[in-house]
Image (cartoon, rainbow, N blue to C red; front, side):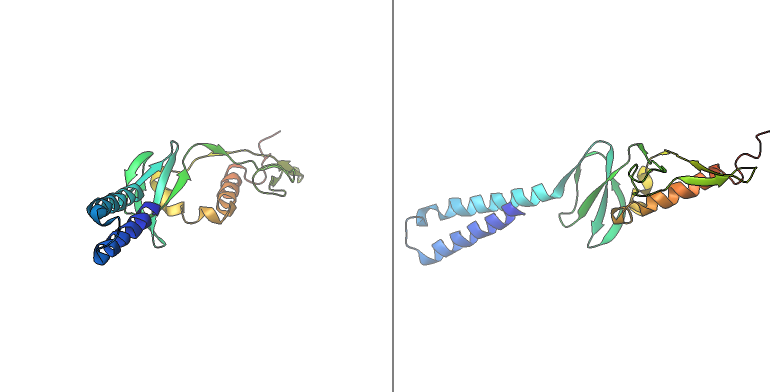
Length: 171
Protein backbone atom coordinates (compact mmCIF):
# COMPACT_ATOMS: atom_id res chain seq x y z
CA UNK A 1 0.00 0.00 0.00
CA UNK A 2 2.91 2.30 0.79
CA UNK A 3 4.35 1.85 -2.71
CA UNK A 4 0.98 2.64 -4.31
CA UNK A 5 0.60 5.89 -2.35
CA UNK A 6 4.21 6.88 -3.00
CA UNK A 7 3.77 6.15 -6.74
CA UNK A 8 0.61 8.25 -6.90
CA UNK A 9 2.36 11.16 -5.16
CA UNK A 10 5.30 10.85 -7.56
CA UNK A 11 2.90 10.75 -10.55
CA UNK A 12 1.08 13.88 -9.34
CA UNK A 13 4.43 15.62 -8.89
CA UNK A 14 5.40 14.70 -12.46
CA UNK A 15 2.08 16.05 -13.81
CA UNK A 16 2.57 19.27 -11.86
CA UNK A 17 6.12 19.70 -13.19
CA UNK A 18 4.95 19.06 -16.76
CA UNK A 19 2.16 21.65 -16.48
CA UNK A 20 4.46 24.39 -15.20
CA UNK A 21 7.00 23.75 -17.95
CA UNK A 22 9.83 25.40 -16.06
CA UNK A 23 12.37 24.17 -13.58
CA UNK A 24 15.23 21.75 -13.29
CA UNK A 25 13.12 18.55 -13.45
CA UNK A 26 11.25 19.31 -16.72
CA UNK A 27 13.55 17.13 -18.82
CA UNK A 28 13.11 14.24 -16.36
CA UNK A 29 9.28 14.18 -16.39
CA UNK A 30 9.09 11.01 -18.52
CA UNK A 31 11.46 9.08 -16.28
CA UNK A 32 9.66 10.30 -13.13
CA UNK A 33 6.34 9.21 -14.63
CA UNK A 34 7.80 5.81 -15.58
CA UNK A 35 9.17 5.33 -12.05
CA UNK A 36 5.74 6.24 -10.60
CA UNK A 37 4.06 3.63 -12.89
CA UNK A 38 6.57 1.00 -11.78
CA UNK A 39 6.02 1.85 -8.10
CA UNK A 40 2.23 1.62 -8.45
CA UNK A 41 2.56 -1.70 -10.31
CA UNK A 42 4.95 -3.11 -7.71
CA UNK A 43 2.61 -1.99 -4.90
CA UNK A 44 -0.40 -3.68 -6.50
CA UNK A 45 1.58 -6.86 -7.18
CA UNK A 46 2.97 -7.00 -3.62
CA UNK A 47 -0.50 -6.57 -2.11
CA UNK A 48 -1.82 -9.45 -4.28
CA UNK A 49 0.73 -11.97 -2.99
CA UNK A 50 0.14 -13.46 0.49
CA UNK A 51 2.44 -15.88 2.28
CA UNK A 52 0.88 -18.56 4.47
CA UNK A 53 3.29 -20.19 6.94
CA UNK A 54 3.79 -23.96 7.21
CA UNK A 55 1.19 -25.60 9.46
CA UNK A 56 -1.36 -22.86 8.77
CA UNK A 57 -4.10 -22.24 6.22
CA UNK A 58 -5.41 -18.89 5.09
CA UNK A 59 -9.05 -17.91 5.53
CA UNK A 60 -10.10 -15.07 3.24
CA UNK A 61 -12.66 -12.42 4.13
CA UNK A 62 -13.89 -9.71 1.80
CA UNK A 63 -15.36 -6.76 3.72
CA UNK A 64 -16.34 -9.06 6.61
CA UNK A 65 -17.82 -11.89 4.49
CA UNK A 66 -15.80 -15.09 4.89
CA UNK A 67 -15.02 -16.87 1.62
CA UNK A 68 -15.21 -20.67 1.27
CA UNK A 69 -11.85 -20.98 -0.50
CA UNK A 70 -8.95 -21.94 1.74
CA UNK A 71 -5.39 -20.87 0.95
CA UNK A 72 -2.78 -23.63 1.47
CA UNK A 73 0.68 -23.08 2.94
CA UNK A 74 3.03 -21.15 0.69
CA UNK A 75 2.57 -18.18 -1.63
CA UNK A 76 -0.90 -17.41 -2.96
CA UNK A 77 -2.31 -14.77 -5.28
CA UNK A 78 -5.38 -13.06 -3.83
CA UNK A 79 -7.53 -10.01 -4.40
CA UNK A 80 -5.68 -7.04 -2.85
CA UNK A 81 -8.84 -6.08 -0.93
CA UNK A 82 -9.07 -9.50 0.76
CA UNK A 83 -8.15 -9.83 4.41
CA UNK A 84 -6.33 -13.14 5.00
CA UNK A 85 -6.32 -14.65 8.50
CA UNK A 86 -3.94 -17.52 9.23
CA UNK A 87 -5.49 -20.46 11.09
CA UNK A 88 -3.35 -23.07 12.84
CA UNK A 89 -4.06 -26.63 11.61
CA UNK A 90 -1.32 -28.39 13.58
CA UNK A 91 -2.06 -30.79 16.42
CA UNK A 92 -2.35 -28.94 19.73
CA UNK A 93 -3.18 -29.89 23.32
CA UNK A 94 -6.00 -28.40 25.33
CA UNK A 95 -5.31 -28.78 29.05
CA UNK A 96 -8.30 -29.08 31.35
CA UNK A 97 -6.91 -28.99 34.87
CA UNK A 98 -8.12 -28.41 38.38
CA UNK A 99 -5.34 -25.89 39.03
CA UNK A 100 -6.36 -22.31 38.44
CA UNK A 101 -3.24 -21.15 36.58
CA UNK A 102 -2.65 -24.17 34.34
CA UNK A 103 -3.97 -24.55 30.82
CA UNK A 104 -5.59 -22.14 28.40
CA UNK A 105 -8.64 -21.20 30.45
CA UNK A 106 -7.93 -19.49 33.74
CA UNK A 107 -9.81 -21.14 36.51
CA UNK A 108 -10.93 -24.66 37.25
CA UNK A 109 -12.01 -26.44 34.06
CA UNK A 110 -11.39 -30.03 35.16
CA UNK A 111 -14.08 -32.65 34.62
CA UNK A 112 -16.07 -33.79 37.62
CA UNK A 113 -17.83 -37.16 37.37
CA UNK A 114 -19.67 -39.41 39.78
CA UNK A 115 -18.41 -42.90 40.52
CA UNK A 116 -20.65 -45.92 41.01
CA UNK A 117 -20.26 -45.33 44.75
CA UNK A 118 -21.65 -41.80 44.41
CA UNK A 119 -18.32 -40.08 45.00
CA UNK A 120 -17.29 -37.10 42.90
CA UNK A 121 -13.94 -37.54 41.14
CA UNK A 122 -12.02 -34.70 39.50
CA UNK A 123 -10.25 -35.69 36.27
CA UNK A 124 -7.47 -33.63 34.68
CA UNK A 125 -7.44 -34.14 30.93
CA UNK A 126 -5.29 -32.93 28.02
CA UNK A 127 -6.99 -33.96 24.76
CA UNK A 128 -5.07 -33.36 21.54
CA UNK A 129 -7.02 -31.59 18.81
CA UNK A 130 -6.54 -30.11 15.38
CA UNK A 131 -8.64 -28.05 13.02
CA UNK A 132 -9.82 -29.69 9.82
CA UNK A 133 -8.31 -27.78 6.88
CA UNK A 134 -11.55 -27.88 4.90
CA UNK A 135 -13.60 -26.47 7.78
CA UNK A 136 -11.26 -23.59 8.64
CA UNK A 137 -13.55 -21.09 6.91
CA UNK A 138 -16.46 -22.28 9.07
CA UNK A 139 -14.67 -21.78 12.39
CA UNK A 140 -12.42 -18.93 11.28
CA UNK A 141 -14.63 -16.00 12.28
CA UNK A 142 -15.46 -17.53 15.68
CA UNK A 143 -11.94 -18.29 16.97
CA UNK A 144 -10.55 -14.75 17.43
CA UNK A 145 -13.29 -14.12 20.01
CA UNK A 146 -11.47 -16.36 22.46
CA UNK A 147 -11.13 -19.98 23.48
CA UNK A 148 -14.77 -20.39 24.47
CA UNK A 149 -15.48 -22.40 21.30
CA UNK A 150 -12.60 -24.77 21.98
CA UNK A 151 -13.62 -25.05 25.64
CA UNK A 152 -17.21 -25.88 24.63
CA UNK A 153 -16.23 -28.58 22.15
CA UNK A 154 -13.64 -30.17 24.44
CA UNK A 155 -16.05 -30.26 27.37
CA UNK A 156 -18.82 -31.79 25.24
CA UNK A 157 -16.42 -34.37 23.82
CA UNK A 158 -15.08 -35.28 27.26
CA UNK A 159 -18.60 -35.74 28.61
CA UNK A 160 -19.22 -38.29 25.86
CA UNK A 161 -16.04 -40.17 26.78
CA UNK A 162 -16.66 -40.15 30.54
CA UNK A 163 -20.34 -40.94 31.07
CA UNK A 164 -21.67 -40.69 34.56
CA UNK A 165 -21.21 -42.86 36.60
CA UNK A 166 -17.71 -43.50 35.24
CA UNK A 167 -16.75 -46.41 37.49
CA UNK A 168 -19.77 -48.60 36.95
CA UNK A 169 -17.60 -51.42 35.52
CA UNK A 170 -15.17 -51.42 38.42
CA UNK A 171 -15.87 -54.29 40.88
